[in-house]
Length: 84
Length: 330
Image (cartoon, rainbow over all chains, first blue to last red; front, side, top):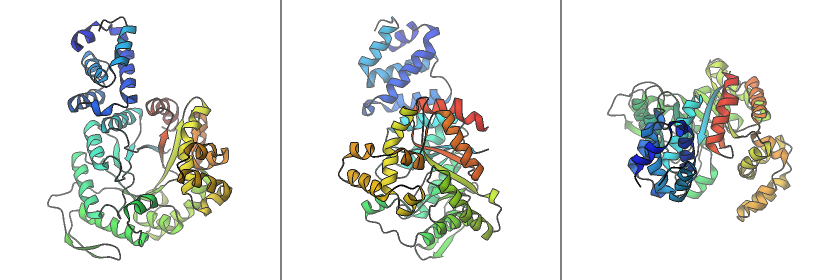
């Protein structure tokens, strides 16, 4: 999946909502063993600096969310009209 | 006005717990506590990450047990954390948790002496001094850190019985009480005052901490449903004296104990009564929680910890507490 392209296609007005939904997917996922070290650190760093709703934050959340919960992430993006 | 703390049991992946700790800092909490049990994620790994990803919230083990972790190791861990985040590391310690001690096969000998000696070792070591101690529980031949610790580290002592409550107030910076109901604190305050007086301290010099079983949600039923399993375990582990204080029939508690011991959790949880919920949790709508916190503050609680389960969904409940509850006390 081209996370850079997808993150760019998300309308700016939806950043907050998408970020919130992706975090929800991640925190409720039981597949924590799939989370990679770099992504976990990047999420926490963006969260600490209030950057999870910025394009770079959404990019990181998208990759993590797809890694842990591919179907749920695809469904969320399709609801937004973003092609995956 | 009480300060606010939040407690996490690290049963979840480290990044989820740290995410919530960062959220708690943004929500206006003053403290984050991580429980210390050998069968969960390691408390100091979590606290190190919390030190990295937060900027102002205070943090510490809540609580570490000196029968499990030698006080020298606790002192070393606390001094290291305080070097990473000066002035933010606090140490919670307690000699309870019979279930874990039994599981490991460690005997709970002379808990008052153990706490006294632990506090003394931690204070001396984190002050950069050499410790020599011929204690009743711990013997230290001559130990000191090879680095210079930064500042004193506040010590909070978990207490339940009269002697431990008094000792905690006498030698600790805070007394940490695992309870949610005003009756428990009305009773505890007299021993806390006694301990503070013994040390020549004012009561205001001692933090009185309520470590509650907490659950907040706009829908009372959802809040209480989330707290029910926690209350069932508290009832099962409560001594007769505590049950009597809250007018809970011993037979009802035994029924829950038996169901839990057989792994029949549905039966155990369905046996939890509204009286048990009232005695052992603060659970309900934000308005209901505010009323309970206010009651505890009037009795003398200065630091209020929202402990497990926090709510039906931890993230949503922290947001709710941040919007509806904490601002009422700031």
